[in-house]
Figure 1 (cartoon, one colour):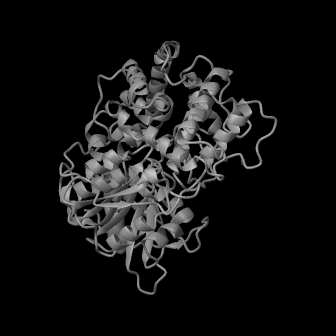
Figure 2 (cartoon, one colour):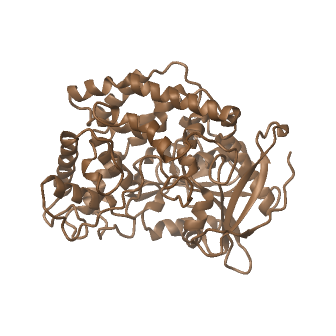
Figure 3 (tube, helix red, strand yellow):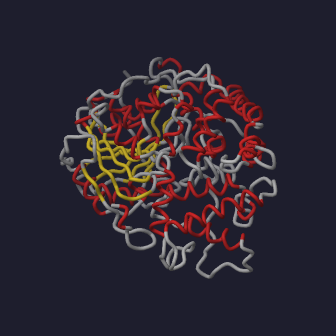
Length: 539
């Protein structure tokens, strides 16, 4: 086993949060064969504010591909306010991300990036689809199977040509081993691993409970990407799970917006039902008027967006729950533009339309103009597809047919987005696999109780997945399930005094009582919504 090292910290050269420190630790490229060399892992931490440190909490903001160092530099103070000022907030860039190796490369810059992906868009291409509920739309969609298949093959080929065997060493199992080694080096060999993971970070957290159950300290799992399915099932065989809650989440958003003077889309007379009709009209109009041009991701280009881009933006807006109002602003602007209004209402502020599919909202890296390195190089595909079980049989035609089925049975608005918004749909052509994977039953009991959290309406990791992980079938009585009666991706997407109280008590050593069944052990409400009072229907 590799002996822990002494870590040297220095002030970060670029940080928004004062006091953040940076460091680099070397780890083996291959934990099973140290002779293959070492790679750097970049860290950032916000030290505790108290004279005597009470603890430390490692954090991962999700992805795959989210930069932990950027998170601490950006939002470390907010996280420290939640867990306690006596705690270090610390994170690292997982393999292939930010300042951590191995250096995975794919595109030379944003122009190269756009040239590769833009063929999916424009008149007659897969990105020109509607909601796949009418036969002509489905027929057009199915004609794009061959073109999409070519893109998926090209992505795999380009990745292999540029990176070769390095792709095998960015998997989640290696990331977990890195995390444990970082704890050993920074805080002492054998100490508990305290970890808070959101979204893909919940896969890291759950893998930790199974790979190192005796090292589990305070572990918070928030916005659950089902780890048992992630490790055991072909990615395209469970893509429907991603959007289980999505239509419900949009309906809940309209319940908060309806009748509020602070919601740009609503008049004082609107109800949830009338707002959903408005949104349908906006999407249908975008589909009918689409001129075939390549979507431009700025405020002037938004009015020419096809259905695919408008629906994707709505889904993205729902990620942030009750923290931002991008959806209300965008939809109100589109409604007025489509109705030939000569000027936008004074209460409509054009949203910051700067986050296309796959680009990190946390990125502050100056490289590649507006795109961070890990986004351009599609590290997410290397991790997600590389962690998956082998898929030697799924065809692109089957994926497209499944997308049509999901569009017509699970989510009429969002089901059609999979080919252009989900990394799953590329995995069937991916040939590289992580050197260590974890295809097993996720029911190995960790040393300490873990906290599993979810909103009732999560647009990408449904409450169903959190409930399943905390159920008797998986972690059982070694988990406590907390439900936030709000919408958004993870419980961090709403302000909730109740959630903060549960987290603080858990970190202090008092987990919630076990309700003795597979339902939520704690049910919390948000303090408010961005539009005012919390709708009564939410609780």
